[in-house]
Image 1: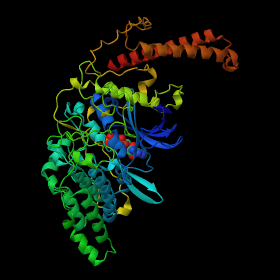
Image 2: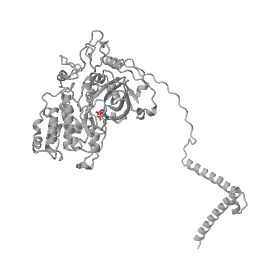
Image 3: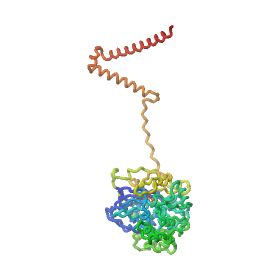
Length: 591
Ligand SMILES: Nc1ncnc2c1ncn2[C@@H]1O[C@H](COP(=O)(O)OP(=O)(O)OP(=O)(O)O)[C@@H](O)[C@H]1O
């Protein structure tokens, strides 16, 4: 078991995604006031340890710290609760409630599609979760079956939306510089694919794709390369599959409109889906059937969709400190509203904020500075980068990991292959947008009871980009060698450090000379034959001398004499054979 921060121990990996690895973990001790859920010692939790390249990106660390209040306050019965955020050295981790059940992607693969009624009710709950987060100004942006966990308790399956904020973290300037795209091609809204302004309507598009996949077993636009899939999102209208009832198709089609303003709000989507579920069942009353057919009237769009911050055209696009749109901040119970349109994720001075990143006193800006401000008011040239201050504060909050002896056989990380370090981002060639691939190609294993038409192979994905082909290494694999770091330096301010000089190589031992330095073809075979003859002679001698064979043959000769006699006989016989052949040959030619 491996410690994360001072409060958690990683036990076993549950799965790995594009942004990190999720572990089953155990609470060692009650978390401090900065955690949304203090937890009890011994309690089991899930911890998502973000990938090394994310954890080492200064922009992402900043965003991670700034967004902690956004993540920690998102509570809804259908949202996986984020309990705590851990920052330690090069490690960023989200502590979540552990959900006992598969994710929707795995579930569909193993059990086949849902019935239209079940799919509608399940998606209605996901839409509830989206409605709550959109009202709080939080857009998920990576809605897909793999991000919906099924909490199986008491024979009920409750969908739980997870990975909120991960897309927001990963889509930092640090990554967008490299033109990497955050999202999964099969679930990407047309406006995201085109780089147009994004709003909460992207989640509605994702919900439409998910709903389609729940009832058919595969997303509507799949197959071919990532670019082809994106092109289909932009240009192709989805076709109604034969098993989708008319009212459900009305909902799906509205969610999949190319124009974001024509998609329903999350709240209306949830309501519409419940009406559809009541009207398409075998026992539905005529009035319910009629209401379901009129569902289109319920699917009004959101008049003020939540914008995605820092996307072109979205509110506060150019402001790197903006975390929430102002409408959300005003409604937010935890975030303070900034009249300049900037949303501080931290409360005013003196407020007891359970999610505060910095301690209540002694902020980085020195005396007089607002200790709760995420960014110092004015960045002095010699002042520490805000990232450094935040890292220091976060590290103070998380006691250093205690190094302890770990039996290698008990260390789950040791069993995993090492990954080569990825190339530094600035050396990456400029490429067209890359699209994060989902899980490797799989075929859905249909169960006979679903009676679905034969499924096509699951979307034939491109081989994943190289970075995902390599086996991953957990960021903390290097921890045992790491010296305690008093201060993490901001890359922007740090002069480039020369790599430490390599220790001179020890001279190699001279290679032992081969017994057969000149390769003679057949020499090996000849040696084998000689050894066999030698063995034969020695074995024969032993048999001749030690067994009664000599008496049976009755020659009275010793082994070597007998061997000589046999040899002479063979030579005589061969000679006689030659003579006979020669005389018969010459005799045949004589008339
Ligand atoms: N809170 C949780 N409780 C239990 N299992 C979880 C939890 N969160 C994630 N998992 C499991 O961990 C695995 C990996 O999750 P992760 O979110 O990293 O995958 P992903 O959604 O495919 O990746 P990404 O969103 O980074 O592209 C999933 O199979 C999921 O079932």
